[in-house]
Amino acid sequence: MTDTSQSPGLFTQLLPLLAQRAVLITISQIEEGDRLQVNICPRQLKDGENQALTTPLSACGTATELDNELVAQVASFVAAQVGLHSNLSAIERELAEAERLAREEAKKKQKTVGNGGKKADPVAKPAEAEVKPEPPAAQTLSLFDAPVAESAKEGD
Image (cartoon, rainbow, N blue to C red; front, top):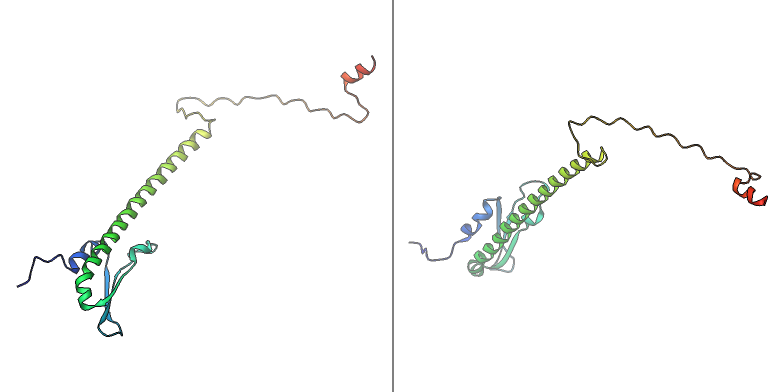
């Protein structure tokens, strides 16, 4: 008969992470004798995914040490991974919403800039273009020409 009063096991601790991605577990004996190395590697789901979501957990120790401590470490690792994934998802949603709002604001500005800053009135008729008279061309004085006002003063 199995003892059910123990804390959840390794695979129970991995379930929340397995709900999001595949996990590769490798176990090897280290040359130093009775020491083992365990690697728990979350797999990448798609290209361009944040590398923090695929950082492996590596633990070394004797079989007894791993039996006693690995489950707690896996629980912390999974909590961090699931939390990081949740946080990244929230950030991605917020960025997408901010980008959508910025596009809408840019469209509104583009519509009002084209008509002098006024909101578009679908019923209004387009105003006829005002014709402004061109200012007279400035006359260029030669070196010997004196302005009219100055020549009057000189004669006094």
